[in-house]
Every structure is written in structure tokens, then in C-alpha cells.
Length: 390
Image (cartoon, rainbow, N blue to C red; front, side, top):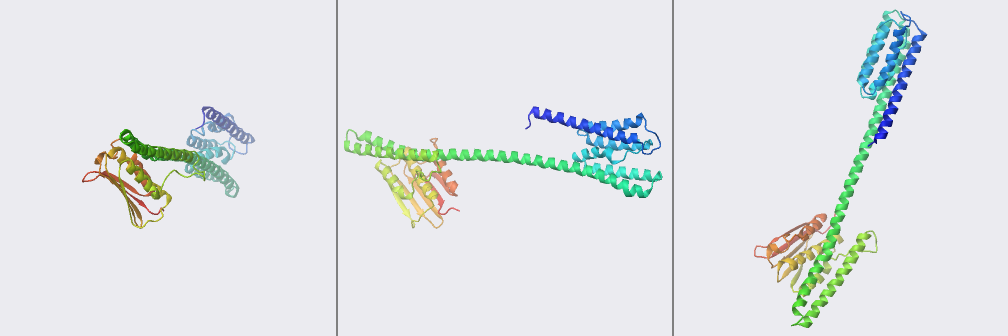
């Protein structure tokens, strides 16, 4: 958007240009009248007033282009009807024709040219002028001059519209870039949230579980308490490594020396062992023939299992859980079940984002995640992921 100062400057410039054009038209027509090339009447004050009037019309050509055109044409006809000397046909109306075409009134300009040519030609022939002069020289000169004025005005309008369209497209592209930037920022925010949640939720839940075991065993089973505290220490160290790796990755995601703190299905044994050592026996079953998976699919499957077990540990009050991984030709199926309290086991009633995070991760790959209470009690998380990414 142009500033107020720019608009005022542009307005003053336009007025100055129109005044200069008006003076030019008035002077040129006055000189033609002064030369007195024929005519029934000698030039008088009224004749020069026609010149002044044609020039004055230039002051309103931008605001009222059609009025300027018609008034100029009528003024020329009235001038010649009064019998004043020749002043030509094209020059007095050229700027009016230009302004009309510039304003998009090209057909009005063309019709005006046709009307003036017809009226002028008929009048000249009726006065006895030589047809060879009328058709061979003056007519061609008048038509070419007026046509050039219309073409110039139409070209100016086309260029202005092109520049306006370019500015509109630039604004649109800028707006689209802003939307794209906002979308990427939102996606990055969600990605960071998922990473932090995935890194901390499971480890903190395991730490809490082992800490509870240590607290219960500290008096009756000191050795068991030591083992539980050892698991707490191990889990804490693992959490710190993953947090440092996550922060480093977020600070410099393009660093080739950094790798995402994300495991794969080959590390599920560690997750299962950690949960089992904390008092939640977990059975791991693998069906089908193991095959290499894309890194994104492998890490997403790992995170889904990890999050499902985290929900079981934190919310379900379960005594056992089972993880089943089934390799198919086109899909990888994941099923995590427990024998806990059903709907309380991570269905979202605790205000967490575990299930929604699983669904977001799976959806990014073209997979699905569903979660719900089992008919006989307990909770189930099921997911399917493509084994190949397009």
C-alpha cells in the first residue's frame, strides 16, 4: 500500500501533467486558428474560446474520460459548423481519445472516430472539396493519428493492468509464503512436542515405577531396592542421553554427525525388559518374516509401542501386557494389549497427548492407529503402517 505522502505526490504530479497538456492543446489549436487556413468566418474571440475549452477538458480527462471524449467531439463539430478556419480533426481530440482508451472505453473511442470521420467527410464533400485530397491525404492522416492515440491509450491500460496483476500475484505469493511458513512452524512445533513427549514419557514412567518398587523394598528387601534403584539410574542416564541428542538435533537438524534419538523395532527388547523389571510383565511376539523397514516406519513403530506401554504403566493398573508385531507384504501391524482398567488406560481421559501423538505419527506415513477398551476388559492399541514409503 502506498503511503499518504506518495499518493499526494502522485496526485500533484497528475494535476501538473494535465494542466500542461491542457495548455498545449489550447495553444496548438489557437495557433491553427490564427493561421486561418480557409473557413467561412474570420477567427474571433469565440473561435479562441473553443481552443480554451478543448484545453480545459484535459483537466477532467482522468475523472471523466467519456465526458471529455464526447465534449471534445461535440466541440469540434460545433466549431466547424460555425464556419471557423481549419484546425484539423485528429489533434484536438487525440488526447481525449487516448484518455478514453486508457480508461477502458476503447469502443467509445472507436465509435467517436467513426462518427467524426463520417461527419467531416460528408461536410467536406458537400462544401466542394476535392475528393482526392479528402480521401487521399487528410482522411488517411486523421484516421492514422486518431487510431494511434487509441492504440497508445489501450497499450498504457494493458501495461497498467499487467503491473497491477503482477503486484496482486506478488501479494498472493507473499501471503502463501507466510501461510506456508506458519504451517511449517506449526509442524515443527508439533514435531518438537512429539519428540520431547516420546523421549520423556516412557523413561519417566519407568523411573517412577522402579522408584515405587525401591520405596516398598527398602526395608524388607534391600537387595531388591538396590536393583530397582539401579534401573532408575540406568533409565535416568538413558533419558539424559536422549534429551541431549534431541536438543542437539533440534538445534542443528542438518548436522550429518547427529542422529535422531529414536530407536527401532530391534530395540523393543530393551523397552520390554525395562517395563518387566519394573513389575509389568510384557510379552513380545513377532509374526511373519522380519524384513528391513524404512527408517521412518521403523522409528514410528518403535514409538507407538513405547507410548502404548507408557500409557499402560501410568494409567491402566495392569498386571500384564502383550506386544505383537506382524510383518505383512505391504503393511506392518502393531497390537499392544493389557489386562488393566480398560478405558482408563490411556484413552485420552487423563488429558495426555499419547494417543493423538501416535495417530499423528502414523498419519504422516499413511498409516492408522486405533485405541479402545477390549470386550473382556483391558485396553488395546492397534496400528498399521506401510512397509514401503512412496
